[in-house]
Amino acid sequence: MEQLLSLSTLDKLNPNVKGLAYDKNAGSVGIVHIGIGAFHRAHQAVFTNDLIALGDNQWKITAVSLRSANVRNLMQPQDSVYSVVERSDEQVSVSLVGAIQDVLVAPESPQQVVDVIASSQTKVVTLTVTEKGYCRDKSGLHLDLNNPDIQADLTSLTSAKSSPKTMPGFIVAACQKRQSTGDKLTVVSCDNLPSNGSVTKAVVLEFAAALDGQLASWIENNVSFCNSMVDRIVPAVSGQDVSDVANVLGLTDKSVVITEPFKQWVIEDNFASDKPQWDKVGALFVKDVTVYEDMKLRLLNGAHSTLAYIGFLMGYEYIHQAVTDKTCLAFVKALHADVLKTVEDVPGIDLEEYASTIIARFSNSKVPYKTTQVATDGSQKLAQRLISPAEILSKQGIISRPIALVVASWCRFLESVDEQGNAYTVSDPLADELVGIAQHNKADEITQVKLILEESGICSDAMLQDSNFIDQVRVFLKSIHDKGIGNTVKQFLAQ
Image (tube, rainbow, N blue to C red; front, side, top):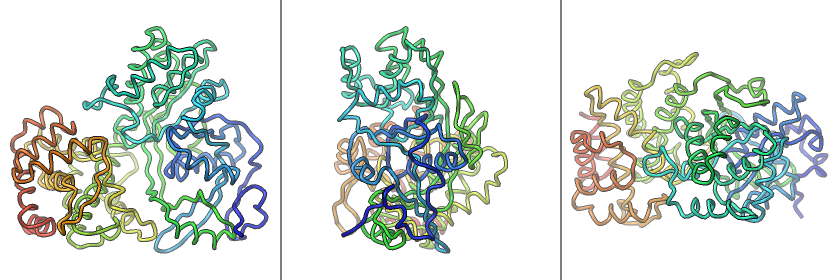
């Protein structure tokens, strides 16, 4: 019979595993995290765990799942203790994390979630709700007031017993209660969005304004929204991973996360009140996160999406397989050469070296990341990762052919049938619309490209009117249709 990792079984832990350096039952909750998943457990919770280990135990985390009970059901029997396995091709290290106090499931107890965010003990709310969790309209700048969940939340918050569903709904509901106590709050977005804190502020204030103008004014004056840049590769965990880690731990950990040794967190120092001293454990507090997030979104995330679409279409299941393909590797380097022209100098970072480090990280076969996992939600990701640098270059009179080829590969990916005729599912909030457009217009590349770019909302009006860029995407898409993705990329590299 398997023994689960928990506080009561820590004495059976293998001695080579780094255990908890503090009493998990001591201390208090100071952070609420919305969007509990593998990334949070491998990133923000690790920074917080390391801070608690230094003796600052007022920053334990209450985590919230907005939809599924899966993570709660895995963590609760383990007293919310789990292991983080850092793997590279050279070494493996395993350590325990106990920073998460408990996990709430929002659909089961929405009022409890509102209450813990509203508590005066809570100083910081962190977010990893993915790009679609911000409930933005197609511009990416505003709240989508036509979103059914947003409409339901606005109705709910006018009732005696509110039961929100969305991130903006929960934050505003909590602020309704904090308004009576005057307790300030800081919200830190940890999602891969440019100006993610500013985006959070916009959707929260617009939600509040639709509900109560005075509440919106109070939030404006008492709640800070910090931009932040996060970086760590955290793939999905397999059943084999759980089995392998059990052999290392001497116990079964059903909540284990697998990650790489590298981690980075850059946070805008704009806190409304007390803040965790994450800078003592490797995070960086700065006045402006912009150059860091541009660097990461364009160089790392842009290349990640590139390898996802082109790699998948070339038949690769994992990112590390794609990046070690000579053709894919050469193409990523060509992409980086273009994108580097759009990234400003970043304090303390050699951008050429950073780009090389990205390729080395993607090559890590011990952290296998599926191309299909990275390929999800392209309509939410590609604007900041690829279209933004393409627009900067366009204004300089440069048509980025590498970016155009990636956009063409995304259009081909949306057809949901690979080059061998095998069907697959496209995961995207706009999947029904985009897949329909891609399939219906695959014999007419220019129409397919224009309609996909218009419907997805990834392009500004200026880019939609950039006939040179649009036509370059069309040319590459026709080549992919006629010759296949592999030959198209090779022909590009040969020119």
